[in-house]
Amino acid sequence: MRAEPSTAPSVSAASQKHIAIVAGEESGDILGAGLIRELKKRYPQATFSGVGGQRMLAEGFHSFFAQDRLAVMGFVEPLKRLPELLRMRAFLKKYYIKNPPNVFIGIDSPDFNLNLELALRAKSIKTAHYVSPSVWAWRQGRIAKIKQAVDLMLTLFPFENAIYEQHAVNAVCVGHPLADEIAVEENTLQARDSLGLQIPQRHKIVALLPGSRHSEVARLAAVFFATAQQLLQTIPDLSFVCPAANAARLQQLLQLKAQFPKLPIHIVDGGSHSVMAAADLVIMASGTTTLEAMLFKKPMIIAYKVAPLSYWIYRQLVKVSMIGLPNLLAGKCIVPEFIQTEANEANLTQVALEYLQNTIATQTLKQEFTRLHLALRKNGNVAAAHALAQLIENT
Image (cartoon, rainbow, N blue to C red):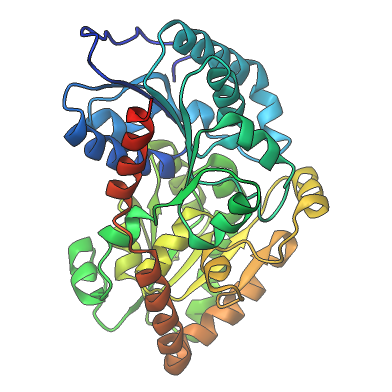
């Protein structure tokens, strides 16, 4: 983890494009890497800098700070790291005003990126924001700030564009790149074989995904493991697989597993897509992974817990009754959500048993997932790069 910025990349030619990107989450790293690949086809000599993760680094991206330093959430938790976050943003603002990029792209992380975009746009630097903040759900007053801060909003989901049209914000729905990458037809058996785990063929697989952050795993993993133990009492022929988002989460999960010595669970390093694709049921934290599970056509249970004060604040502000992306896309509750105290082993076990024992219900759900998957297939990486190239060239 870097506390100080690394050395800046050089931009040698006057005609060479310099594209700035700040992605503060693993999901943003995925979007950023795909975007860089497509932009490099249009601008082969471009340099890319900002904040990103391993996938973006593999595309030749220069990250001034380790991406996980931006991976904070809630209202209370970011306050603990506020001085560091402010220093990072101040550095990026100063650097890009002194070395103006052809475009600055903030991927998600709106509380960090929108202020940066606002400052840069005030200096006549073109700005774009990729992944709409949830203005349709809460803090709708941010629309005025967004209109000032960005030249272009790239949204992932069709339902998001209506509010931007109402406020005359330039927005383009590019779909979600994962909808393009993940096959419409599922192949659970092939995915199961690819895991290479010693799981009896007669067993159904339940994937447990308690999140990628330390706080998420701390609040949800034990509940998920206890649920798994309860499920085994009714359905003995089950195996459980839990992918760790990174090395730190792997160690955290292995320590928690020691509290459940008899639980037949495989904790694996990474590979969440393979695990979900191989599963018969996914029990998971709310977030982008719920979209991924939907694209793999997997019955799922969504659970989430945050710090009590953060939850109280959310309750005062949030204007929608659902948080799971499949439910938001469908416009109705098609998968169960359990939040805070409701995210307990009794509730999770009851619904999991219904999924595992009701074939007709799961088939109906998979048909709905297929419909939603097709609606999101818009060649997202290409569409995003095209919209950004138009912004760059429109002088």
